[in-house]
Image (tube, rainbow, N blue to C red; front, side, top):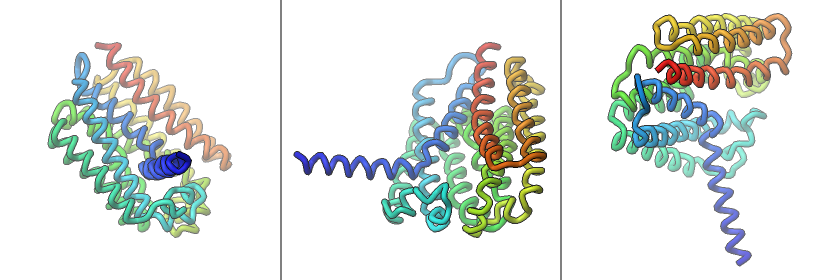
Length: 299
């Protein structure tokens, strides 16, 4: 009995290691934005519950597989950074072969679900997102250019497009507006993190912007991209995709983000950089929630 309990405990621990590989906190934001895209794609009423369930599951599986592949490729880098050294691969809790098999099974299952129960377009778009993040960004961009997060941000901006395609079978201008918002949000979000992790990125040999161009240039870039983001978030109202509820939320949340970015530029501290990073996550989730609320209040 005692042996069985220990075995169950060990199995549960290994399952947790695999779960951690999927970067669940990041994955939850990805899935959230994808689901918002599904609901916004329906002019009136609600999307099919079956489609929402299958698309959410498929996208979550593929996003988790991409995260696991990222952990596999970057395990040596992760071992050098305080933020990532506790992940299962650097700690030796999972092997490279186990991670590769897990990523293949999870990603393959997700793509199969999308193809069989959603539509081929969503499957192909999700596959391209996987390749964009796990291969193009992780292998080619991140170790070679300080603009890695700008270019690679295209993959991270895809979730609402995937959700939109899942429900409608097409990609429209409104879906691309959602993409553009996340694309513009990614640099200030990530550079706020990179600023207080500069020494770690430098020791890992990664050419992040504060490493290659210095903290002052990076802080200015955060401010400028935040201003660009503010303008981009007004486009859904300008194109009549959304109404006044969303506009008020976009202006209020955007003003808060600009305030953080300005303070970061003129009076930097690691604590403020951490606060800016955390606010950026609240900002994006709140902005998309406001889009959803506005959508149903208007209709």
